[in-house]
Image (spheres, rainbow, N blue to C red):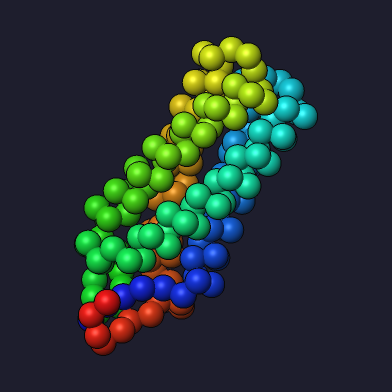
Length: 146
């Protein structure tokens, strides 16, 4: 048996996560810079790139059977943690680059932003994964091996 999910489910997860993260990114950038316009620009730039990366990342994980129940499609806590860490490592690099380009010339402030973003978004990613784990809509259970 193989469990995957519909594109609409992945899209719903992506949108939910991205809305929460955009709010967090804006607030972190605003706290570090006190510049609303730059914080908004940074939040939008990261939202666009983060959404694309999240969707691709999640679609790749639908192909990986590791630590996913073959009966109901639920993921183990460990699988959610690993998915969270991999995604956050990819996006932290993007966060540093964009913060340096948009928010500040200071590498220290850019790194502080990326650390704050990393922590906030990692927590949000895990929460979204666990909430959607409880929702069965959009999960597809195939009787044959993939």
